[in-house]
Structure formats: structure tokens, C-alpha cells
Length: 513
Image 1: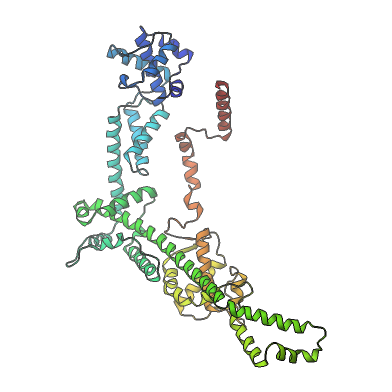
Image 2: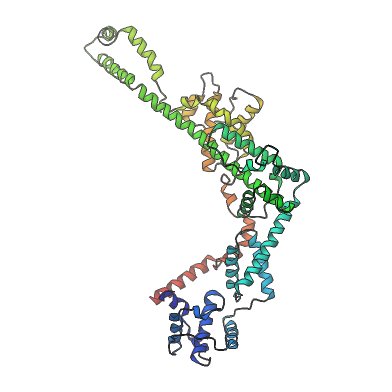
């Protein structure tokens, strides 16, 4: 403990010094002050006074105007320690840890155990609550036994609630997931534990099939709302960690509940992984198209340079005022390039010409069939939702999905295009006024990727692609629990009181410097 810590935690007020000096003898005075500071600092009385730094003891002795100690032998009588503790408890308004407090703490621990997974976290919560409520903290093993009891009760409660939602069909499916068929080394459950493969159309299709398989089990019908996401993830991790044999040794209630949590978490993670893979595949289409454009640019650089030189030579003749208009064409054919060669150059320009903004959309269009390998199934499987209202992009996605289902080859002229950039519009708008299906669908898929990243589109069943409000407390929850959260943080609810407290603390620190 540093010198600053000793001053911070072992400085006595005038009234505390007066109270300590009522004790008989220097050892009892310092022992009383030590118990007082300990209760004020950590919410409990010391159990081993020999562990207290002698510097802290002598700092208390100097304040009480008694001689310093080389060895602190307190208490000389056990009853003296208890008498001092009772006086200090009444002085500091701390209450004992009685049966009523134990019941109240158990209720709070139960609620916390639905969110928290580790005993260490529950112990920290119990200590903070007892200190905040000014309750003398009991021995560590008392809290440890209480926490172990609460964790067991909560686990039984969770398993009972989940198990009660399972119908006979789901129980039968869960049992089949744990059966190792003859000639196989693994149960069907192990297939859900495989890490996701590298991004490819086939890999994405495999993920989408896995999503459908889990949904067919009926996992989405189960209610996990009374548990926090962290608790579900914790139970899912437990379920994933057990192989088939240990899982079969559990009672049905625990076995099926762990499987339900695992499959629910697997569904969520698989949906997010599928979206990530979709984004990666669309990004790779754009990247490769840009590479193709760059390669083409390098390939035709010499031809373009020849065209520039030709343009310069022809332009020089056209701009020469001394050459009569009726002689211009002949001069070009004679001095620059013959007519037949010029005709070939003009035709070659058609293959060299690029859009005005020099984009790679035509190269993207060549990969239309590649994107169709996964986009159709992706739009069928992933439950895409608009962030606020049904904007053009969301309506376009619904239209493409409808065209896929009904095998429509053409995009209707009334298709929404408010989300389409100008460069895409120039490519997809045909001369007869119709919309090019390839460019329209590709533009929609690219914009879907952008909207998923920005949050303008979200996905039901996802964890990382939800609307921002889903990551926050609901208005009702915040209204009901606001006071409790501020108490846990030891902060006033009123912002004006918070500012006043900060000002007072600033003045106190300034005066002490």
C-alpha cells in the first residue's frame, strides 16, 4: 500500500478520533480506529490484523497521539474486538448481515445470475450491493455458499423453462442429433460445430442450408427473452464443448436445454457469417472487375497512344487556316492516314471507348451468372428488413425476389430506381426504355451490401446486423430500471445533482492541494 493510499483510507475525522480515544489503552484505540477505517473502506472488518501494513497502523497512532508500534497485538481480548465492532457499526449506520438481508441479496443475485455467468462476477456484485446498502459483509465462504446455491437454482429454473417449451417432435430431433450412425465417427450435431469455410458461392449455399435446417427444427419458436444474450452464449458454449457421450449422461432437461441454446446461438452466428460472406463475395466481384479494367487499360495503352497521335495530326490539318475546306479530307488521307486505315481505326475506337466516368460496370455485368449462384438462395433465406420505411432499395429486393419465384425474365418499367446511381442508370436503361435485368439486379445486390454495412437494411435473427435501437434498452425497461442502474453506479439520477457533486469534489481536491 502506497503512502498516498494510507493517507486516503486511514485519515480520521475529529469526531472519529474522539470516539477512538474513548477506548482504554493505545492498542485498543488504534484497533478501534483500524476497524473503523476498514469498514468504511471495504465494507467489512479485518480478519487478520497482522496483515495490515505497520505504516498504516502507525499513521493511525500518530493521529491518536499515541506511541508508534513495532508489533501490533490487537485484540488482546476477543470480546473487545466484538464490542468495538458493534460500536463502529452503530456509529457508521452499517447494518448486520441478518436473515432479512440474506433474502434480499438472494433475490438480487438471482436476477443478476440470469445475466452473469461467472461466480467471480456475482461475488463482485454482492460485495458492491452490500457496501452500497451499508451492510457489514459476512465471511467470504458465507457469500460463496449463497452464490453457489443461487447459481444452481437459476440453472434449474432456466432449464425447466426451456424444456417446458419443447414439444415431442423437437425432443425426438434433439435425440437424433446425438445418434452416431453405424459406420460414422460423428453425430449429426458435430456438423453444426464445424468452423465456416472460406468465402465462395458453394460455401455460402452450405451456410444457407444450415440456417434452413436449424429453422426446420423450430428453434426460432422458443422464447429466450428472459435471458441476456451473454447468458445464452454461455450456455451455448457449454453445449458446444460437450461431445456426444458426456451430453447423453445429462438428464433430459439439461441435455435438451443446452442443445436448444447451442442451436439458437449457432443460428444467429450462421446468419451473421452468411451475411459477411455475401458482402465478401460482392466485394470480390467489384474488386475483380476493377482489376479487369486496369488490365485492359494497360493492354490498350499503346493503341490509345497511337490514337492520340493520329488525333493530333488530323487536328493540325483541320485547324490550319491556309488549307481550304474542300482540300482538308484529301490532305488527311494523303499526309496522315489512308481512308481505309482510318475506317479501321474508327471501328477500333468502339472497343476502346469507356463510359464517361471510366467505370467498370460492364465488367461487373460479365459476372452476373456468378452472383446468381448464391444471390437467389440468399434473398430467399435471409429475412431482410428496412430500417425505417420501405424505401426503393427494399422494394427492389422484393421485386427481384418475386421475379425469381415467378421466373420472370424482365424487370417491369415501374421498378423502383431511386437508389440507383447515375452511372448504373446509364447502363441499365435500354434504348427502347426498358430496364436491363442484369444491371438492375447487380446494382441492387451491390447496394444491399452497402445498406447492410451502413445499417439502412437489417436482418431478423442476426446479432451484428440489427437496427441501432435493438442494441439499447427499451423505453419501458429504462423507465423501470433507471433508478437501479444509477444506484449500482453510485450516481445521482438528477444531472443537476451530479454537476453539484462534481463541483464540490473539485473544490475539496483544490483545497487539499
